Image (cartoon, rainbow, N blue to C red; front, side, top):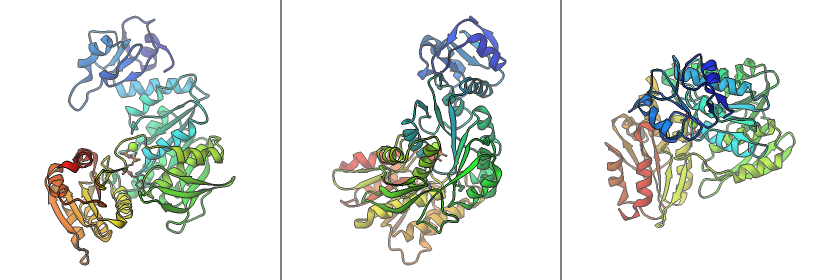
Length: 466
Ligand SMILES: Nc1ncnc2c1ncn2[C@@H]1O[C@H](COP(=O)(O)OP(=O)(O)OP(=O)(O)O)[C@@H](O)[C@H]1O
Ligand SMILES: [Mg+2]
């Protein structure tokens, strides 16, 4: 954070100051009082279980200089009408004060965090880079990430998410991006948007916000993304994967010859206008290849050379938890923890990886509900079941009532000989599966965030003894 006095903060946020106008905030801006530290600013927001205002005193006791709040608190504060709007105003002020810092935004229905984490590990080779931990991609996480920038910052690699029209345009006003990556248009939150075309329009807000000097980095393999080329003032750079479906147009930056090792880690040849290089990812699943190529295209745009890109991608690790974490137990059972979230595209990607990993053993999937799909929800769950059965799984366990249509879909595949089971919760899934697992088996655990199935994966990993 660049140092700001409380007087400046009150001015920028149109807030009312209660405290010493000359006191200076030098530390991090946080919304979790437990993370408040010396020199910081604590923003009080209502949470799921508690109201941040109740922790104002604790944050100041922990060292925060003041609290950004909407109602009076017994410690130094700046009272504002709306905390997210105040954070946005502060973030915009900071980014405007740092013209040497280039902002890159990444959006898409699936793979934002994966791509952001890969891109950050490349861009860090160029200079001081700010990138959020995990998904920090909404009206809170986005400005909080931007506020971490200071005079040394050269790059910000940001993840932009939309749950409705206008959200990405808003985030782009908070920190105007120079370069933008659009990964894909899929069914994540499609129910809230009203369909894929609406999702595409929302993701397109990123490229609409780009300036003429920037680059719109678009997935050539996704027609809805490629069509966004018409909606931007920026130069268009395409990325893609050669040997998936027939490319609509050969992408400028692309992967060819994708192959997977026994744990599903992809190797490929990265092709760019400057030449080609071999890459072996440490991530699991063929679906990470377009993410990696998108990250490469962004890093290339920022000036990273091909050798560094290939080297950086091969060295990059998964920074965010519960996305295709593959672990093998001592007894030879492999667990894929992909319990961070779920939508039709990411479940298919995970089932493809499961099928690959289980080539020499049996594949089991513990699948929970895919949330926020709207009116296509039931049909989408059935289709996933059918897809899973075609992947010839030995067992398919649907967790919770909302996930049961998965089993109906699986039964549509008459030739499927695997076992289908509906259970009420993760614990029951564990009980049903634990005793029958043997060396060589592979278990995928995946559901939307609300299902919290990551605990099931953790128990499976510990649970050779169970
Ligand atoms: N290109 C892709 N296509 C399909 N699925 C993908 C792709 N990239 C990642 N995934 C899968 O999507 C899930 C979410 O990945 P990730 O967290 O990177 O996405 P995200 O877009 O950041 O999600 P969120 O909207 O929850 O922030 C994981 O299961 C991951 O394996
Ligand atoms: Mg994310």
